[in-house]
Image (cartoon, rainbow, N blue to C red):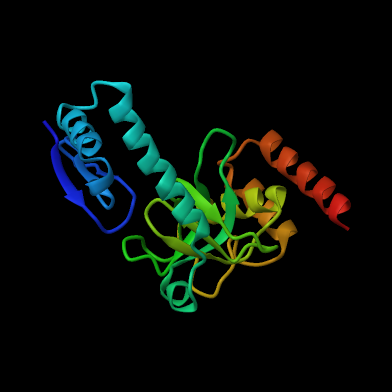
Length: 209
């Protein structure tokens, strides 16, 4: 059975998930004087494990409240200053709600390591965006590379066998021809794949010029 508390801070109900899968239900009673029996009924249903639609609606209402609150929140200068960087960032392929990039200043990830964030909740509406908020934390967004160029930089950096150094760029330089030559020289990537990356890069440069 989940634990249930009442609060009168605002009009929102809250569901706190725990590792043991038993939720903590915090139910608003701000205007309890207007509908005492109604609040008692909601608490009773919550306490018995979300076994009907009315209790499920309380949980859904909480989720919608959280999403609206997140969407309204623009990071402060202090929050941005404290946030880690995501360099060479890119949204994941369709169906995956996270962002890829090279991490810097992350408390749990070595600088220059490539990886992906937790699910993205909000992206700055500026162009180019300056920050992204995920389920786990806020990130500042660094340089963005067009997709074909980024793919070449990614594979070059990966096969270099080291993370990106602070102040360096993924791939080691801005010389894409040198990167392509390096990828061919390693023998670790099929020649046809390098040819495809080169062709995509040249078409991308033509579109963007």
